[in-house]
Length: 403
Image (tube, rainbow, N blue to C red; front, side, top):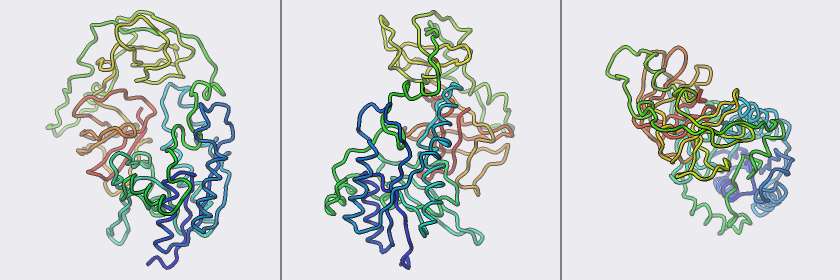
């Protein structure tokens, strides 16, 4: 029994949060629905696939069908300051931010949580496909962030920056279900969102023309597109010389593994022009507008200071791959602080650097300067600014911003 605990559900106007609200009501909670409006400028949207007016109306209709109170709250100022401004700064610095991860940490489980508590909430709930477990340790409750049961929809990666305090207040009612089961629940309840397509694009903004979006603050600047000519030094991507059997961890050896080659010193030739290196990211294929190549071009490095895009031909070109990555100490985050590594320690983990990427085995090595993730197999398109999350089994225990 939950003794009529109050849960504020973030109703996005989609099927997942709608089903979450229904399940919580069925479990005996006092449920309140809240729609968050976080964005006002629709000029950069590709389509009206995620218009806030339609989403808000759908959320309100779901609340009416379920017979729960409904509020619409505007967090657009907080969203711009804490998410959008961060995005602009990261792209300008040549990094690739993940606003969805930040949105969960800064908005849904911070700004929204605080607003929910003013409505009397004991918990906040979302339609994320992930699960929460807990256990007692030395008189303290430890919370675990577990992958969603639907492996195709698991969203634990997006929550990899949550704290123990945030997890203690969070409920994920659909995390144990498959997507098909969630839609069936919505159909049986005659919810207007039952057949609605999943939203895509930036959290709370929708599908955007990223260059136009970024040009709100970042000016176009013409620069060179260059092609890395073969032969490319394969040892940068294929060999792993670090000896993990050694008791002594030499950081210089780790640095040599994670460092990218100096592309400027490789054989290169100019093949075109772009309108600003800060508009592009590592691994990107579209938007280069360079023809006449034997194979598709992929961006392997961006230099925002010199305003140069480095490219290579073919999706499996070695220049796209890295053997490891580094996270500065200030950017290392442990969900499970009781498992935090001290400098000099290491741990075998599973890791991913983007949503829906299969978990891959790696060794996490903690040094005074930060954390190194050394992969068993080289990984593709690792970009600074992305989040790397590490797991033990299906539990996400930590994450960090790639340097």
